[in-house]
Structures are given as structure tokens and as C-alpha cells.
Image (cartoon, rainbow over all chains, first blue to last red):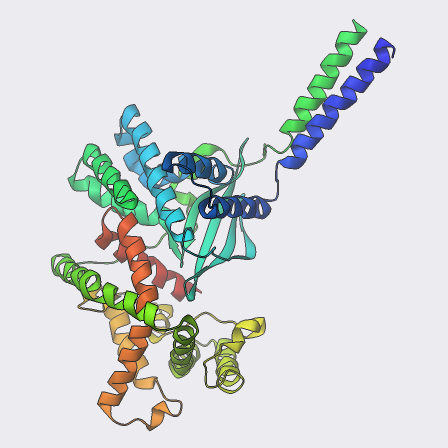
Length: 201
Length: 247
């Protein structure tokens, strides 16, 4: 094979690899979200024993494909974000991420695999959409809607979840606001830590 | 020289292609933290009785964890799932009159018609409402209406927030609306034939008991993940009602 032909083949190979990589990146936000939720449920219902830390790592890694915890947490803290030191911001980001993962996965980790129905996607305009789903929960259905924004260089990211019409970002924001009116950020961090421990009991 | 140019081109093409999904026309990160980013901002509810409400909330919390929760667990174990579901469907079907009236009061005649359709289908093909056949009929789907929502849609505010012993959160407007709902339902036979107040009360207790396991699970889940469960429940109530009124 002459060097020129070899280089052309190499160029084609590079392009092929890149195209394959692109094919694996899901650009349809609903399909991406479906994949993420399905993977999380599979991890939670996988009978293979793994440690709590390993399960957390795997779930976080899956969720981060569709959920931006950075955006969700900064939005829940809103104006309180600026009152926190750099170290407190880092700590609270890790702690709230943990609390949200525990709260979210606790409901999906029952004896039976929950059924998730994707109903529709509404365009909210200005690069925002809302994906409507229902989760079969015991003998009833709970509506869970995901709001996603198309963020530069990150693609579609969940920035809020609505459970039975209640925005969790707005709900936590109200709680943080009221808590920080009378207490310190350090007390908030301690409270979140104790909440996380309750899940592990 | 030519060789290195070809390699450079190949690598550039590869990088460009792999970056293609990145959304360069998307939102700037900082846009997501602007106040006007919110779809709908629900105004906070007045809570002049917060001290009293918090005390009743704590009382309810003890009742829920010490009495209702153990009872709900036993009920869920003893009563087979299909029976639990069927009972829930029957009571839901029996609330048709208040949903119908609320829709009419809000001028939603299309929804009132769909409610009638659901009631007829579930009462006949669904054997008295045990089976919710209408769930399989997209053309009959509506959002659930009550009189509190009707008053909200006329522009009436909540008044203020209330926590009722044993029952939980409501507002002055919605509490008043409940009385109107109660006078309208349950009308359909055989419930309309029940004159005796104690029999009606028994029916209500059976209905509440049947809903208890699901309610307890939701309450537990909220309580566990909340920083301040009182504020969380008050906000969830306000948001949920605002959404129901807007729908």
C-alpha cells in the first residue's frame, strides 16, 4: 500500500470512528432521558451485590448524562448561592446531589420495577422543553415531568423535575430561603448530612 | 508535507464531527439563573396562623406516623391489590357530580361532557366503576376539577393557609370549596339512597382508608427528603393548586 493510499485510508478510519462516536451520543432529548432513567432503574434492580458507594457512583454517572446537578442546585439556592464560601459551595453541591439521588432513587427501588410511560413533549420556547411521564407507584400513577434546557456546549439538560405538578427546584428554594433567614449555611450543611444518613438506616 | 497535511485534515474532520452534537445555539449557562427564566412563578400563600398551623402539622405528623402508617401497612398487606384499586375506582367514579358541576361553573362544557362520558362508560362497562375503562379512551381524558379550583379560576385568592387536624393542608378558599363539593357528591345511586348520616360517614371512612397506603407513601417520601417538611408541604400545596387552577 503506497503511503498516499495508506493516509487516505487512515483519514477515512478517523472519520468513521468520529461518526460512530456521534451516533452513540443521543441528540433526541426524550430518547436520551428514556435511556438514562431505564439505566438507573436497571442498576437499582440489578441483583448483583455491590457496595453503596459503587451503586451511587454508577447512578450518578448515568444521571449526569441527562441531569445537570450544577444547574439544579444553583437554581435551588438562587440568591443564597452568593452568600456561600467557595468551600461551602463545593460541599453543598455534593450533599444536595446525594440527597436528590437518594430521594429520587428511593421511589424507583421498590420490590417491582416501576413502569415509566413517556406521554408527550411540550416545547416551552426559548430552548426549553417539558417531557411528561407517569410512574406506576403501588396502585396509583404519579405524574413526573422533566424540564430540560438546551445549554451551550452541554446539550439538553434537566434543570427541574415536577412531581404531581410541584417543582422540586422551587420547593427546595422556598425551604432554603426560610432556613437561611434564621440559621447559618453550616447548620444547613449539617442538616442535609443528617437527612442523607436517614436514608441509609 | 502533503502527508502531514492529510493527517491534520483527518484529525480535524474527526474532532469536528465528534463535537457536532454540542448545542452552540443553546442557552448561556448564566441565563438559567435569571429570575425571569421561570415558566410560572407561584406567589407564596399568606400564612398568618403559622404558629398554630405548625403545631397542628406536628400533631398530624405524630398521628400519621404512630397510627395511620402502621394501619396503612396492615391494610395494604391484608387487602389484595386489585380490590384496593377497584375500591379506589368506585369512589373516584362516585365523585363525578362535583367534577361535573365545577367544570360547568368554570365554563368548561367540553370537560363536563367528557366527565359525563367517563362516568357512563365506567358505571356500565366498568361494572359500577370498579374498572376504569375510560383510562383506555384518550378522547375522554380530563383534569380533575373541584369547587376550590372553580373559585380560583374566577380570580379568587387562597385567603390564607390552613392546616386542619387529621386532614392536613388547605386554604380558606379550598376549605370552603370542600363544603360545596360535599353537598353535591355522592349523588349517583345507590349512594343517593343513603339518607343516614352515619352510613355516609362509614362510606367516607372506607374511602379514606383505601387511599391511606398511597397517601402515607407519598407523605413519607416528602418528609424524608425535606429540609423543613412544613414549608415543603405548604409550598407543594400552593404549587399544585396553582397548576390545577391554570389547567
